[in-house]
Every structure is written in C-alpha cells, then in structure tokens.
Image (cartoon, rainbow, N blue to C red; front, side, top):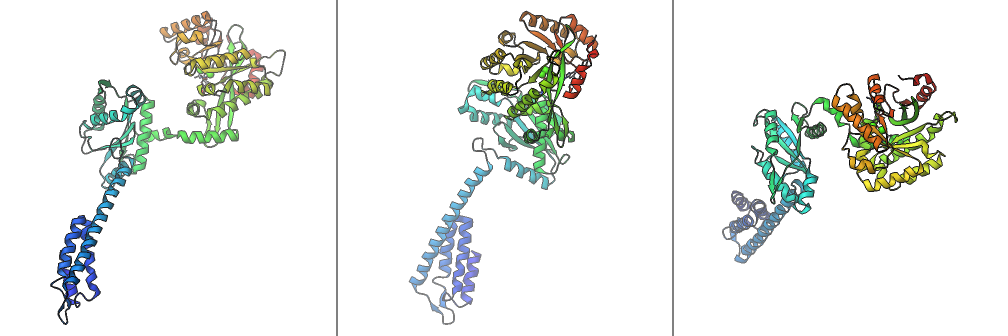
Length: 529
Ligand code: C2E
Ligand code: CA
Ligand code: CA
C-alpha cells in the first residue's frame, strides 16, 4: 500500500497521469499478486486504480482532471492484470510444490529421499552440529515380500516405519533410500551414548510388527558413520555408513560403526568385476595345481586346478577374494571357460610319459556355470577340440550349489558322467548337508571340508563326525577326499579310518604347473609316512 501511495505521489509531482510514470503502478500490483496471489493482485489494482483515478489530475500544471471512462477503464485493466498474474503465480506455486514433492519425497512412504538426506547432512555440517548417520537395512525384506505379497508390501513398510518412528525421537529423522534401506540422522547432543542408543534400538526392533493378523519379525542391521570424526563430507559419510553396513552383515552383527580400517573393505565389487573382465582379455590369470594323494598307495592320480589372479595394480590375489564376487555375475562364465581351456591345454604336459603317467585334473565350477543351459555341451566340445579324453577331467562343485536346481543339475551331471567325467562334491559338511540328496546326486567323490580336518586331535565330536562321513560315503559307494591336511597326526587319523584320498599343505601346496611337474617327478617325496 505504501508503494502504491509513493507511486501516486510520483505521478502527481511528475505532472499527472498524462505521462508514462503512471505505468509504475504495475509494480506493486504484480508484487502483491506474487505474495498474496489473486486477492492481493485485485485489491492492489483497485487501490492503485483509485489513487490514479478520480483524485489524480490528468495534468498537474493545468489541474485538468481525468474523465470517468478514462480512469475507470484504466482501473478495470489493472484489475484484470492483478487477477490474472495472481492466478498465474498461484498456479506456478502449486506446480513447483508438486515437482518438489516428486523430486524430494518417496511417493509411497512420503519420506524425504536421499537428496534431502544429503541436504540435511550438509546443513548440520555447515552448522557444525555433530551427528551420526545411520543406515538401517531390512535384510529379510524378500521373505516379507513373499509372505505378505507384492500388493501389501508398501502398506507393511508404512506400518513398520510408524513403529520405527515411535522409537524415542525418530519421528522426523528418517529418510528413504530404497525400499529396504533408510537413513537416520542422529544428533549427538540430543542423544545418549551411541552404543546404549543402538542396543536399545536393536532390542526395540526385535519385536514383531503386527500386520493383517500376522506378526512379522524384521531382521535389521545398521551401518553407522560419524561426523566430524570420520569425515566432514556428506557423500563420504554416506559411503562410510554403507561400508559399515556391509561389514555388519558380513560379520553377522546387528550394527557396526565405520572405522578407518574398514576403508579397504570398500574394495568395490563393481571395480573388481570391471578388472576381471579386463584381466580375462589380458590373460592376467594363472592356474596353480595341488595334488591329491591316494592314501592306499601314496600315488597321485589327480590334481586340483586353483585359479590365481595377477592383478595389474593389486598384485597376486587368491580366489577366495574374487570368486565369490564373480560368481554372482555372468562373468563367471567366461572366467570358467578360461580355466577350462587353460587346464585342457596343460593336461598333456602333466602326462608326457604316456606309459607311466595318467594324471587327471579337477576344475572348480560354480552354481552359475552349471545353470547355463549349454554348460555340459560346451565342455564336451572343448574336450573334443583339445583332444582330451574326458576321463582326464573332473569337476568339483559344492553341495549348496548343486541343490539349487537339483533336478536339472542331476540330469546335467549324469550327461557329463556318461562321458567319463568324474564329479567331486566339494566342501562337504560346510553347507546344509542333506543326506536325502546325497543318495540321489550323481557324484563319485566327497571332499570333507577343511574345517573338520583342522579339528582332528582337538575335538572328539569332530573326529566322530569324520568317521561317520567316511562310513556313510563308503556305504553309498563314494570315495572320500580329505581337504586341508597339514599334519602327520591328521594324516594318520584319516588313514586309520580308511579315508581314500588326502590333499593339503602336508603333501604339497598349490603351485605353478612347472613346479608341480617337478614335484611329481621326484618320486621319493611320495613316501609321506
Ligand atoms: P576349494 O575348492 O575348497 O579349494 C581348496 C582351498 O584350500 C584352496 O584355496 C587351497 O589352496 C586351500 N588349501 C589346500 N590345502 C590346504 C591346507 O593344507 N591348508 C590350508 N589352510 N588351505 C589349503 P584357494 O586356492 O585360495 O581357493 C579358494 C577357493 O576358491 C576354492 O576352495 C574354490 O572354491 C575357489 N576356486 C579356486 N579356483 C577356482 C576356479 O577356477 N573356479 C571357481 N569357480 N572357483 C575356484
Ligand atoms: Ca575344490
Ligand atoms: Ca573345498
């Protein structure tokens, strides 16, 4: 209103409405429309119209006044402009609000999303308010999905979030990351000691949440990062909380607070897969071989092929570090193909002396290899291509991997067995060993997991288990291989139980083809007793 008055004065002292200064009146109208929408625009237009209307002369020098139609026409135009711009501004505001809602909030839970989480962290960082960032993961969400169904899942999540919000003062502190991960900003000054808080929270989450007459338990874990101790950058804190979450899960803990040492845990899986791909092309892999000893005559009949990676930057890497990651991706197929071809081209070098030597080689394969519809056929083709008798090749596969698609796998293994390829059931006893399946599986050998062998001489119960495994395997007409034999004591115990084969550092460590060929040639070493 003041602005309207000011403009009226300007118009008056500059000579009246005949000059273009009168157009200044649009400024307060549009401003009022911006702030107060249609109502503001119209009221200001009417007031402005009146101020520039009946009391304002056309020319202050001559004091000639305006005609009625002159100022009333102007006023109607001003009202139209005020109303219309007010309408436009309110439309714009509601649209902006919608865009804002879509960009910053999850539509299903209504929670602010990851962008908001980062903004909120940045605000706290700018104000130097110390806080913890917690990432909460619902680990069993797939199981929950299965039980309550797809349609109900988002309703259930809302119910669960309500339950979480009721814990202490979490109400406005939860952010959506994805359907099973949520971020929480916990200000240090407002809360008790972190450990006490987390323990209470975990205990609180240990209760079932009621949903549609069901009581649903949530298997949760928490990864925590710490501002300012561990980082002063929002992105980095997010990263660290995720690394901590991964570590909590791998250690089967309910929570883990990020520490500097965990940074190597970050060894990004994506990076490993990209490097694997490159290394297949560059031939950065190598096969090591480890002999299996026939305990009846101390002879070596078979060698196990174990892959090694000469990583261009990280150096020598053992398969325990990368195979579990590669197995989750389709890259395990070209990698196994590489191993197969390498082994097939090595076999003849182990068997130079045709009369005396008859070594076969065992390759480790993953569930995903067997699942590939062409695996058996392509293996057989490769054998033909390299002109290798299939009896020279065997496969090692873990029981857990075999049981995944048991009917299909049995068929595939039978096809390979017909050809003469032998099958080892690897890591026996480590997974869910199911005797029911053992009878049906077309395997020839059973490898007792190293864990059991390690406890020989230390745990009577384990020794009894080994005894039972051997007897059971023999009853099913399977030969038994003991893995990881490191001492004479372990060897003697196993020989006493009629274990058929043994493999381990006591005899030979896995080594390059050249070294193992040399080792095999020095026959006196075969006298292990
Ligand atoms: P695995 O099949 O159970 O292989 C036996 C592992 O125990 C090997 O580890 C071997 O070096 C180690 N070992 C042998 N004797 C002893 C011993 O006396 N004491 C101890 N402490 N360890 C012993 P490695 O070579 O690191 O391989 C780890 C795992 O990686 C293998 O376990 C296998 O599951 C997987 N793997 C290795 N090569 C391949 C491959 O070419 N393809 C696939 N899919 N998996 C592979
Ligand atoms: Ca193996
Ligand atoms: Ca094994």
